[in-house]
Amino acid sequence: MRQLSIKKNQVNVWRGLERKVIELHEIATLATEQNDDSLKEELKQETEEITSQLERLEKQLFFTGDYDARNALVALHAGAGGTESQDWASMLLRMYLKWAERNNYQAEILDVSPGEEAGIKSSTIEIKG
Image (cartoon, rainbow, N blue to C red; front, top):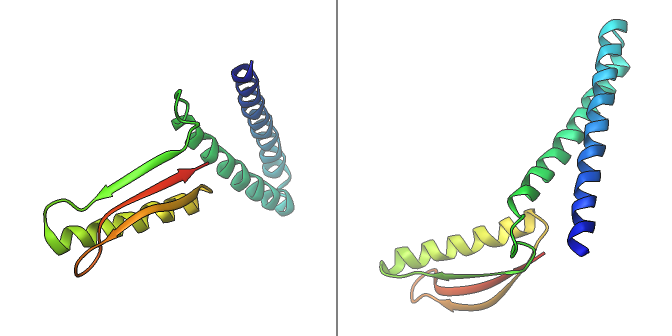
């Protein structure tokens, strides 16, 4: 029952987006016929909004598997390579934390083992959302 509700929600969102695109097409036709700058500005703003919403929806399509709604544990290990691999593991940790922040996920560092000179030997993070 829960899955059906989720699917109905998704269909409603896509239908709403489709209606907005049809409205935009009508506004574009009017703006072209009347050569109205205010309509063109409104068209530009609405297009940017729809593009942003479409990008969010496209990202959601990547996460439609059985386990995609769950949290993720990410384990990073420097491996062989000494200081350079430890530095690289540190860069990866920062990258994953920034990615989570930019995509509105909560990231929590569960464990960090610092490197001898620079970087980290290993780290475990949990990404929620």
